[in-house]
Length: 320
Image 1: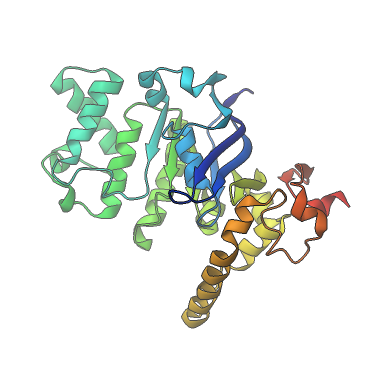
Image 2: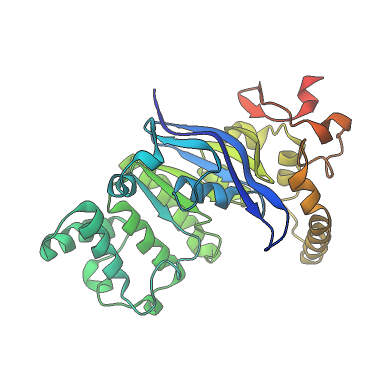
């Protein structure tokens, strides 16, 4: 089976502030997504580079090094209309996806006219009505509503409908449920699974929430400070983690006591702020300052990937 999406040594460099140091927000990332319906999760905490990676795939940013291939072609060699017919975004903030001064239905109509290529207004609305029905809306009910008349969950479903209008092969969803109430999150996540299974659409699902990642994912890549440090089938990576960072992520999830959770977050933020710059400029493993197993080589040389139990991990512990 061929590859739908392939990232080859993709790197994106930014600068902290106007005169700050340069750092690799995405550093030498190589991943592939098979040409079959699947959900590939990119997971990691804030600052891991996962959103930057999503924006590189969506052509919002251009890589400084490496290349991204879709169906074997560099994404910058694909015309805009063809690209956006095949690859569609869903963003984190549903309220920012639609102009509050305009009715959301307008964006759906523009998508059909400009990307799908239907010109007749009646045909446009007939086309939209089918997709809206699929995500649980009646076009006659939503057509005259403004943004503020929808809940966050409803707006996110409208955003999903807009993405589906082009009949894409791939949807890149960047933290699509993080700003929604818990009652709406499972509905959106289940809708993604339904779209994958019934419509054959693949997803790049960006999240910091390993609970939804475990529920929704077929494959997962764990990012830390711009690098993918572990990847593979989600059930393998999340049930049998290999990298010390992946283990820490999983172990630190359940903190039911609010006081303990607040204290843990305060310590984590203070610790992160004090070493973040040092981590980004390291030549070796970015996790070395936090890792209980680190030794001298970890500071100076980034380990290559090694495959263990069907997972790919980047850690010197497995080269001893």
